[in-house]
Every structure is written in structure tokens, then in C-alpha cells.
Length: 287
Image (cartoon, rainbow, N blue to C red):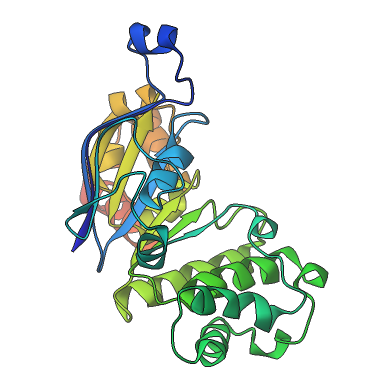
């Protein structure tokens, strides 16, 4: 089963003038996201349509034209929301937007109760234990740190057992240790629990280290949908979409240009970058 967008058009401006202009905020010819084992980065310049796309996946928004299909059923204005939002869980960039109860346990239990799942508090505690925040169950979530609140928000979605977990800029504002901890947790959900992960990010290190697939947006159009590592080999695309290179790749590109090295600069970890430089330098071409 999957989520599919076909010939989808969405615009916040529904006026006749906007329709006649043919300019839309988001236009997706075809996009398919499987409900298991995907790890996708959605990237693009500010205003490119990333959040709009993820809100369509969760049916916070609905296309003006085209089809949104979830589990082979077309989603319309009359479609019940609960089955969709149970399947596709969305975590906002700012966790306080989806936290409202006076204790962590109540907040995390809300989703399972709303979806009428059996033993909602048990599911909530399991989700909190997975995230390492079970000891916070009696705390008021608004007294927690930003990182802890983000974990509460994720636990609240996770407790409802979604097949696809969508996160909007989940690492923003986190220190390096908290960021790595969160990303390793998402990797665990993906590889062990087989939950598909879709995340919006401006961090290209996250794209190359964790994501297998990248979707690049510009002005509401998908410029690229493919292997996350191959993305950076297309210099024109990277420039056109106003993307940055991962830090290590940027250094390798500069070394190649400055010293005319015969190397493949598209390396994303220290070991492979060192090996590439070692071949070029110790191989006798440069002394």
C-alpha cells in the first residue's frame, strides 16, 4: 500500500485571476510513497512547497485538481480523516503546535484514544519508552525543553502506530548530540520497525547520511526524485534549486579545483573522502 499524488494542483489563491494565470503553489505530476522502508528527504529553498506537500500527504490540505490516493482509495472532501491520519502521522516543526494536554501521558495517549485503539495508555507508555521519555509521563509538557517537547510530539504520533511518519524540520534547534540521537531513532524506526520516514530538511548532511531518496522542490515543482547521493552529482540541479552541498563534499570539490586533483569529490563520509585523496596523492600523480 502507498500514498500517491497524480496530476495534483494546489494553490492557496483560489481566485479566478490565479486560475487563469496557470501559476500554482504546488504542481505534482506523479509521486508515490510506499508505506514501508522508505527514508525520504524533501528539500528545497524556502517557499518551494515542502510543507504544502507534506500537508497534502496527511490531508491537512486537499488538491484543487488531481488525485490523492491512500491505500488505493481516492481522498476527497468527504473522506473520513481518521484512517488517513492514522496511516500518515505528521509531526510539525514546532512541537507546541500539537501539544495541548497538562501531562505528557495524557498528551501521548490522545492519538490512540482518538483512533479508538485498544489500551491507549499502554501504547502511549510504549512509545514514550521507545523515545526514552517514560520518566516524564507526569510532567506538564510545556515545562520541558525544546528537545523533550519534540520527543513528546513524536511519541504522540508514534503511539497511534502510523505506517508513514512525516516530520517537518525535526532537527531545527537541537544541539548536535540531540540531533544525532533523534536521527538514529528515526533510522531505528525505519530499519527495525519498517516505518517509512519522510522528513523536510535544509541539512544536507542529514540527506546523505540517513536518507536513501531525495525529492527536490522549486516553486512547487518536483525537480528531482531519486537517489539521495546521486543528487549532488548534478551541479546544475543543485545550483538551480539553491541547495548547498554537504560540508565534506564542498571541501572535496574545492580541493579538486584548487589542486587539479583527479578525484571523485562526491564523498559523504571521512573514510571514503580520505581513501579518494589517498589514491590521488600517494598514487604518484601529486607530490
